[in-house]
Length: 302
Image (cartoon, rainbow, N blue to C red; front, side):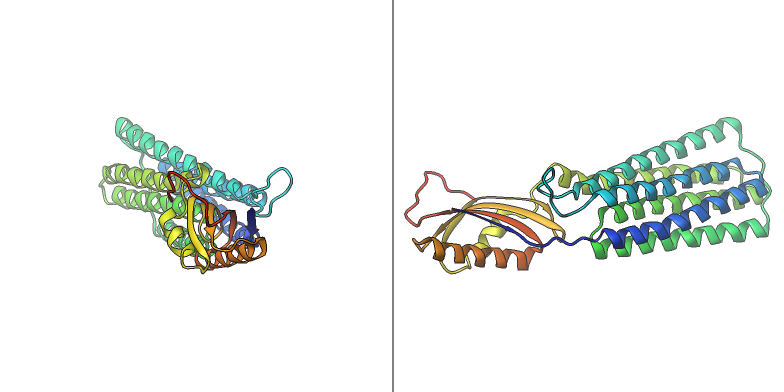
């Protein structure tokens, strides 16, 4: 007998969409302010940084698109739901981070070879850049906090990207101040460690999303076995497999040997197992193949 349970999944798309729209407006404001300061100071590096900030807005648009597609409810063509679209969107952000890292290194090398560009830094430009930095910090903290609360891959990944923009803005700001004080080498020297931080953010996003896409184990089978064996009437469970994302939706498959011999009693035990696992691990789709108590197998493993 096979028993399948599908608990209601948590659809957070509307909340994620609201956050992405707010951050899109803020990111467009950042692009505009950086472009204004770049024109005011004559800084090509700041104008390039404004172009780099365009990727933040592009990420928001990408996130809005994938979030709309990431419906957790199944349909005929997608019987397991559409949530992996969100992970695909997060991988797109990882690609943007890689491009940003390359652009930072490229700009640093070009400035070393060309000897840099003269800039004129004033108090007004400095205050605007500090406001830009404040907006970026707010966006990163806001997206990460809401992303963790909603367990949204796309928001957490976008927060990582915004953090790279924060470091880039700090480098550009430090470089402008350094040039203002005659230290023309400062902004170039700081560009390389920032590129490493950007690469690290991209690697983190990639590492967090690949396991979900390749169906890596979500819960250790030994942990599931321990919980199932505490349900009265269960003799043994084996061939345990799991995938998915804890807190959003997990898929669990197992074979289970039960004490009762009648179907109704065996079904009640599977219901108790499903309720216990869902209480511990959150929304889950559980498939149980029930076997009689006299069932034997040469190798019964987790």
